Image (cartoon, rainbow over all chains, first blue to last red):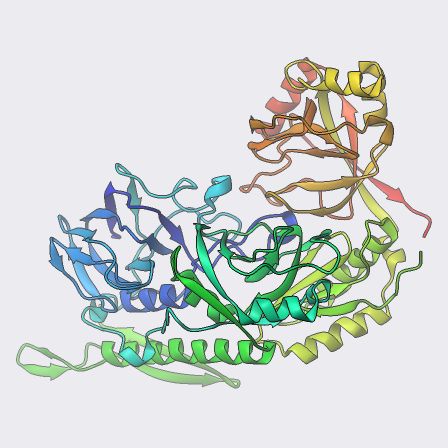
Length: 354
Length: 247
């Protein structure tokens, strides 16, 4: 039996997100999905789920949720002051919750603005066009297509086997995603770098930009030295890739994020590396951004490192779950794991006594 | 103007490449985009996440952990060598029934006043010529249609509306289009279709795809209600014809 979450307070903007609604941009359907997908994956692994399960994405001011049922919860990403029943609770750890427990947040501690809260079984909302992610602008996906509010009752799915044995498991510091608030944001030139003079591109990569108050899941509008166009800002509409730096006529860059529209008619001198988007998405208005030139190869390398960290965490989880436990005075394995190779493919088989 | 056969491959971050055939709004150019899309979809390259055709280019989203960028470039280039726009010579014509004027088309009179045409003439010209869907974008399910009779061109409203119901058919300059979802907007509304041009819960969610033609068909208010009810009950079959094009 899965958990239910009775929402007492919705928080600033709490939405259901997974890895996003890929595959439908040709229909004009924005992708949405977690702004910090690695943090989402870590929270899921800790809660006993598969990495891309639907969880709650929380922005700055978190919700208040009353739990019904029995299961696990794990928080990752920014430290927004997680408490359970009024007592501060650790992030990056699988915690058990039961009926009557109240999960709430006291407010941001330090920097970072997005936290992920994963529950055993994941958030059980209908799959729409292949995803549970919320795209609020069109009211598609997630919980009724919108952010959570007081009075909502959110159901979680059936937990995966071994969820109980995950309780207490935590993510070592070395496998937590680093979101340095001062780190340069790396980007690859193109597709319309030729619409700008070399000086304009130097301005883009050599200046410090400030995140304006118009910064949300759709994009971050930045303010700083103007990036002038050679001839004009308008192009015949083409696709807007995730992370595209769009420069309209006013010459100020906008970084296009998860909820971006699929196509647009403004020049894009560069596109931010996928792995660095989460670094940007954890910053808030008033904080700054410096861009650094990079290559697609570096971007691919960072994504490979991300995949490696997540695989390592998955491995640690199965070791944690299969550790011997004392049962009736003697140490006895009630579950285990082994690796199976069939035709060159490797599968990790986990088992437990029911 | 003859556009190059081979597209320019433009960098668009670490997980996307853009194959750009030109910089204009042109059907022959768009046919190349569609042909490349079909060619790549057909060879089902492992690691390609999705293909997004626009007016003049094809965005190829890929997973760099599954597909090497240089390998992808080679696949695109070899697909371009055997590109066959002729295979796209037969395209779909999707009929969209529209109830013009009245409460569904509150700006039909604006269009008449601006163009000097009668209501009947505006409707006749709007239904009289098929329009081509270059791409979808802007909002979920919005089709960029080209080829409307230019005598119907009317500027946008000075004061955009805050809420336009889904299905509204409008004119903005030389463009015509259908609002796929309730949204704000400044188009001159001339009618409304009873069909859901976009429904995220339906497969496929859109009625019109890039590369299709759209034929507007005038219907009465009672036909509007009848089609709406039938479509809701899943008992309406959208009229689709095939159009043969000389290459």
